[in-house]
Length: 203
Image 1 (cartoon, one colour):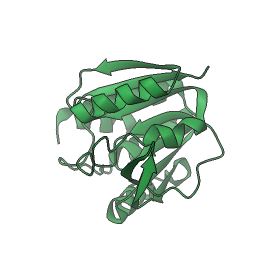
Image 2: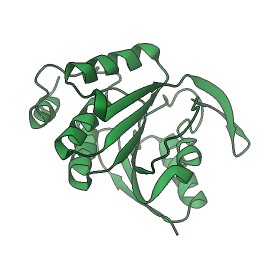
Image 3: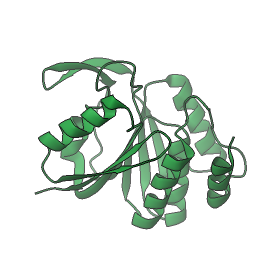
Image 4: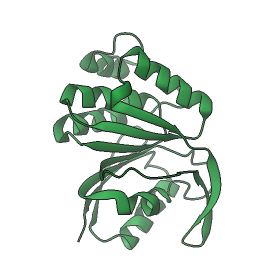
C-alpha cells in the first residue's frame, strides 16, 4: 500500500485497517478528491455505484461531518459483505448502507446493459453521486445507465464523480450524458486513472 493510501488512513483516523485491493480499489488520488469534496460540501446523501474503500472513507467523512449517509450498490456478494464488515469494525453502520444489487440485463435508450438490479431508489434526493462500477469490461459504455437511473433522484444542485475517466469508454459516456441532460458541466482531472467531475444545475 502506497504512502498516499496511508495518508488518507491517517487523515480519517482509520487505524484498524482498510479494505485495500491493488486490483480493485479506487486509486488514492481519486479517493482524495471525493474525501475532500465530502468534507467540504457535507452532502446529506451520497449514492454510490460499487462499494469498498470508497464506501468506508465516505462513511467516515459523514461521521466527521455529523451529517449525511452513503448508499452503495454492489453486485458482488463477497465484496458487499467485506465492506459491511469494515463499516462494522469502525462503528459506521449508521452512515452507510451496502445494498446487494446483482447485475441484470436491462435496456436504457433501447440499448441492453448489464446494470445493477435496483428495487427502489431512496426517497431523499442525492447530493453526491460516485460512479466506480460496474466493471467496464462487461459491455460498451457499462456505466452509462448511472445517469438515466439516478437523474430523477438527483438534487437540483449535485455533483457526480466518475472514476476511470481516462478510458475511451468513459469519455464517450460523459459525452452522451452531457448531450442528453441539460445543466451538466464537466471538468476532467488528470489523476492516475482519470476523474470526471460533473456538476449538475437542473433547469
